[in-house]
Length: 497
Ligand SMILES: [Zn+2]
Image (cartoon, rainbow, N blue to C red; front, side, top):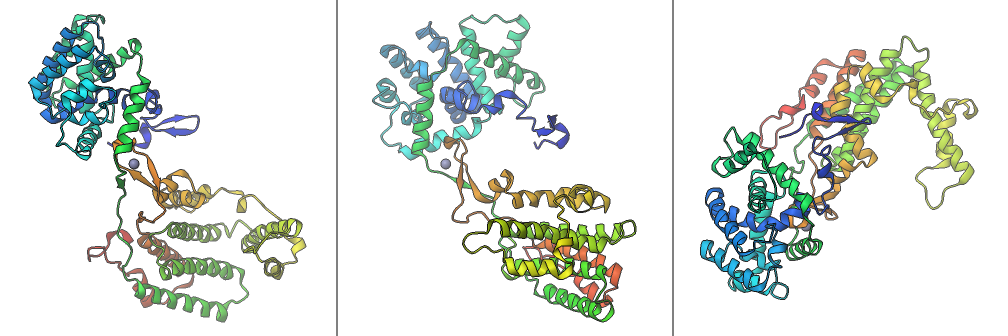
């Protein structure tokens, strides 16, 4: 179940997910944690439950732990590391009992962890020649997938058995009511209403055992080392289709619209700042889309920067028009603001010089900065244009959602924030034995979801805005706006408007 924004606790201005606000989950490598520290100890119980199913598994385990209690009255835990340390003949008796109950095969996978040299009794009892290392590892990782989370039904079953064994010792004194709750556990199915209360009790009591136990670091480290060495990475990625849909017709018509606007500009108002600015911004969007289209960047990181650029340009056009009346010379100031930023870089280049072959061309930029107004008169403003942050600007032109749903996401890519890095450049290994680590995607296995429909969506908004101002030729405008991107299975895409 996905957590909603409202479930997050606002902690010092940051949203903390519900999972992370539970302190224990932050410490995955803690030896007291379930996943890293306890699961390897109780994985033998997990194998039995996973192989035999819950009912039979719990029945057999009941007999098995009673026997363990009888054979080793001083042993207060069902941790595998401690069972493996029992006296040789006690171990042998216990393993033979298990084999008599459930056969050899169920625990055979553990012989990749408890090896001949360290644990001869275990190996002798459970080693099976015809079970390959791969099969043993597969069986282990299959079970681990179900029990990596500390609150899954499967892990709770295991934690119940571990707790039950501890309670057999009679060292934990519980109120009668709680004892009844615990003993009802194996008889109830996970669907039962009472379980909503019983499961958390089992888990919290199992956690209490931690106060009396000393983690066996050597065993835990050995478990993770051996199982991760012996299993391969299973890389996991969502495969989004590579963008191959044809928008040639759209791009051709878009070109016609910009041709029309350019002619209009030259014919009617070549010296008007307003049209100069608006058409300039729109053309910049057009060129960005064209680049993405010509180089098929729709599935790439650059494609995300393209959508972001289109969105910001569109917002800026609306913003400038909206503030035109209450900001004298907004069009000139907008240009000056941009040239001021250029001037700042220019000054740095003059002062420090750049090595190699910088893509900033000092002479050319100097000409651009000076073409409009003598450089000396351009202020250098390092704040946001018109003293308003980007989010407020989006708000003020009623494009809050465009900001929240799109711009913010693409900004992560622009700034190289971790979400974007994880999504675009790191592959997840789906092998629980590797504790779900990540691997650099240097061979481009990741295909990001196409940005093409969103590019078209924002471009169409831009065109509609231009249409309000300059009345584009009706037929042409409607053809462009009405262009439908086919969906990947050949039907009309519903996401383009
Ligand atoms: Zn891996």
